[in-house]
Image (cartoon, rainbow, N blue to C red; front, side, top):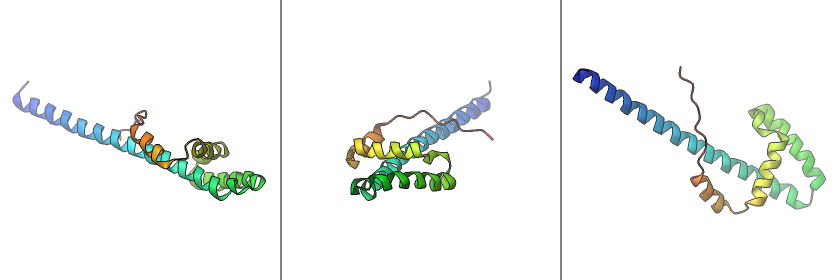
Length: 115
């Protein structure tokens, strides 16, 4: 292999490492932000609806929210998921702990499609 071929190979490997590292950091950031989003959704529902003693009304609100959010954003906001958001907030009421845990979570790498 010539010196030029080795330089190209080293350059390619260096760029591949940059891209892979950036993609991994982006995936970790996105997953952390989504986790915080879900916690905040659960918190808002708990505070605004459920903890105010309006349980029957709250059940209807969750279904209506699910329908509206699913229509707007897709399947990530099913009734079941919204109930999970609520439970997540109930089980982890301290946002500082949630932040700390999010920073330490290791998620499965996202597989990017090569164009």
